[in-house]
Image (cartoon, rainbow, N blue to C red; front, side, top):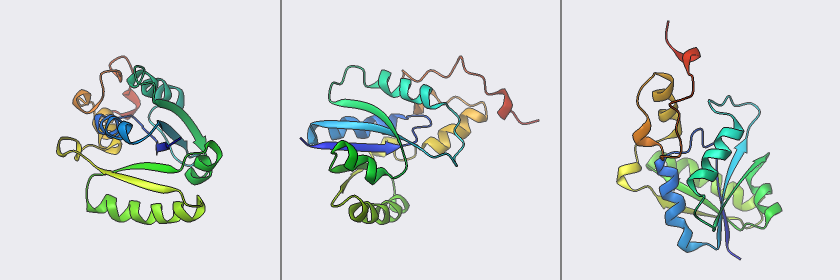
Length: 162
């Protein structure tokens, strides 16, 4: 079985992430969207909220599973029997960074292969980091988020500038 893991923080999941998963589905028997948990990192949204959003986004797609993991992505892949990592490339900077990580994952993951998909032009400017800044700044982030990610009822007052 060809299993790919699409790892990330998905804080929040964006339309760019969704596009990558949908484009990868014909290539694999299963795609696992896996949230990596880094205890050193501060997240805007809880793990439970991010998992719920991803599950809602892919509710009608039987080939997509949602999970979370701690520690190394390569070890997680080995544990679940995934031989492929899915990564998106928006620009040359992404490529330089991801190339190094993929080479390390190949060694640590004992042959784990990274499959790169180049972002569609309409998504190449979107990143979770930028979307979080728009949200914290009180801007409208809806055009960057799938419809299942409704942040309208959430409070971000602690991020307002004084």
